[in-house]
Image (cartoon, rainbow, N blue to C red):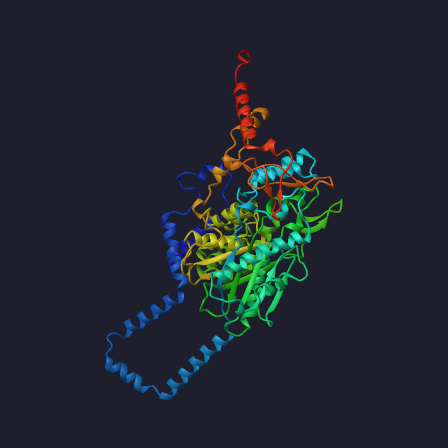
Length: 618
């Protein structure tokens, strides 16, 4: 066991903080190129760790093999006649008693073991291109909002969009396409029916489970809760049985999806075999649009996007695709800072909104640590547990002067689905768990393509992993979500049967991902030229893909005027239809027609070229 002691000593020495003399001046220099970074394991360390994990994780098998080898070595040579003679000396009543005891222990263990819960299938809402909110549309909306009058706030919103990690294809509901947005109950109900029914239709189309087989319905939505609730709306739409158990969860934020899965797990473990539970996770945005000017309450307007996901759970393994192995929920509501980091309230002008505190990322990191303390011992292999115990012992002996060993969760999971709450949230989790860019690829790409879809984001990430063909039988998935309260939820899944195809929300765009962040930053990097020339160049050299893809509507201030004015895109005809289907002929639309638009771009190009000439040639 000398190699075991050598590896444990090396692991503890790597946890010791580096001295300032040997600390690298620039970390980025050590993360680019083929050069090995300081503190990275060598080939010998990797071989020792692989041997260590093989022996420790299979300790019982190693002991059994060693025992059998010892018995054979001491009793060799052995004959068949001697073995039969020894068996005849054993009394039959002893053999029968031993067999009965073994069967009783096995039966008792099986009856006391909770039932396994399986994920039969899941489906996600895939928005149409008409819902897209590209970067240019968001900027125009910010400038047209009547309650945003400060240029500094507009510049802040522009910087926030650039650094959020959200791409050009994220979608918002119809209500956001109006200026000011439509916050009525009718608009919110229309959005709810669109996203919820689309997700449920998708999950029923992908599985053989019929609506009549659903025994439990759980729907979660944090902000908007109408009467009747969403669970009753699903029961009414799909004609479920009269004895179905329906539950509606609200106010739990982005972690409500895994909380619903935990609730369904508790119900299915005490239900008869063959019981099915339908879970729908969504967030309705139309009613929660904030119309004030406080920045901490304007954040949800910029980060959240429309989305929904549905999944069917069952306590029978016949049609299961994933097995739910572990689930841990951590609530930090006893701390004032954590309790108020996501808080619904009114501003000084009486406008209701969700306030996202500046300490949100820090509270997420602290809550994640508490969650890992309870979740790690349940999922980590024995090798990592021993290393953590040795590190803790060494830290106690040296009075806390040694850094704790950070367990490698990649030994327990092959895939990670981190809640796509924002770029900073993903960065904090990646740094805290020591994950690579490939491990958090699904989270970053989901944020880029669909934005923050609240509680349904982890299923979009699972769909990304399967669409890429990375999911294999036996792979383990760790889902992490954060929510108001403040809460952190972890769920461990084991793949039983991978998807047969890549159909899902990524079917029309998976070939374009992953998107490299360096290219994104280069595409959105501000132009260092002077303001006037930079503006001319941006307008003149604007690509066709950057044109507005969503119409911006706003109603006329005159009560007698029933027309709805239109502000681009210029490529559309002189008439158009709004989201309700009514035809309109807007005033002054000829100013935005294609010939006028082409002429303006030509004039801008000529003026930008002339501005570059010396003054004596002008």
